[in-house]
Image (cartoon, rainbow over all chains, first blue to last red):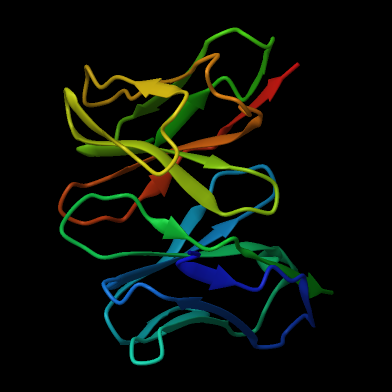
Length: 112
Length: 112
């Protein structure tokens, strides 16, 4: 059973557009949700960390969690070519340090 | 600079040989993790450790071993029992109470 699903893409959008990246999950126990950005052949970089449902904003990035539909989103405003990367969503149920369950990632291309 | 270092960046191994991947962190984090990433795949958890001298198996521990003798270090040994060891290996660390995991740059292992 795949617990976190992501469309692998690629998703190609023009520079300056608003990007919407999405994940669905199946484990109702998941309470913490993360988005990572990974450039080719590099380690993932933590972008957003959220708890339960709601929105969290950080600069051009907004993370949104809807636990009722088990849906996770990341919005990127004013997208830049440097945003071109693979975006991974991840979740865990909580209770301290534990391994994360990752989606496969969405490959995003921002066209100049 | 605080961070996580992994060495070597690239590693080549002959079939039947054991090999050890290094992971060091100076973030004063209690918890450390090893993940494996295959092309087009998300990260899968191999082992994790919440405290020195203690570690737990993740989803794909077979063919791997770890030790945690120091807080700063969490080496991973890929044994000859691992049937398909060619992959990108990522180490991460987090505070024990807040599971924000920060990743190292990764080691790309190729079995010849």
